[in-house]
Image 1 (cartoon, rainbow, N blue to C red):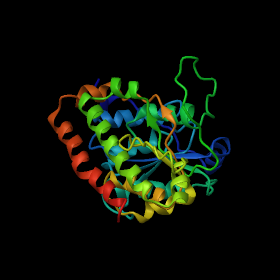
Image 2: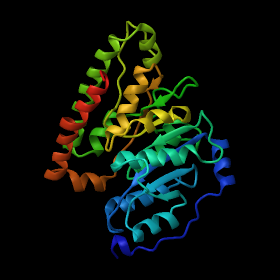
Image 3: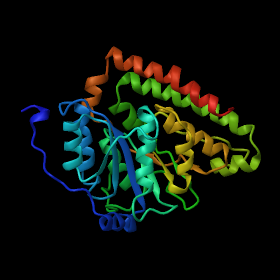
Image 4: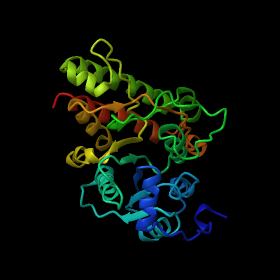
Length: 308
């Protein structure tokens, strides 16, 4: 049986009251955007696994803005329990426009308030659902395994943005070797850019944005990971920036730091990439060139945002 021939169980999206119930338990909404050409796509099935998992749409509100063909869209809409919307393009083009559209839907759900965490992740990062619950917010299934790696920090009431940091052992073990090296290099570069920029800021902005004193500016962000979260009150930062690709995720974080908002980058997560993705991408020239494009295209845009 091929991937596309597998039967799909009908699962309704949550009612408004169910959404409110989720938020009373844990004040977060997860949002993402998707596009799959066919139901045979490996990433389509990883998305289904993400949404249908124990920590997925059965535990928290999950918003998906999807641009897939109708036959793929209908499966996502009817068999995941997520709040799936057809992409309209009203918030701009590309991944960036879809991200903003999903954030806007997430921010408008019943029960969401200004302190609600809006959590972005790629739909194919299935293990991240568990990481949000057990390593970042720590409220769902708090009786974790004794051998599970614990986060090095926790969410504080004063935090405005969360940028989870991959455990380096899990990162190196589970990612394609080229991606591990390119993203490690990119993170070193962007953190050097950031900390140099922060040393030129006012002392009050330094301490407000990094949680560090002016004598200890050593903020380190896992820029190339992907997942991040922000409180609903900062939605405007993401809606105002009109980027069309990965820049739409990262540059609003730069703008937030420059405005003095507090970014918590100290929460480590034992995230592991699906081994099927490593098998598919490692040693593949197209994926290797994608990593090079991110270093040579995306990272300079992030650098430029510190001085615009």
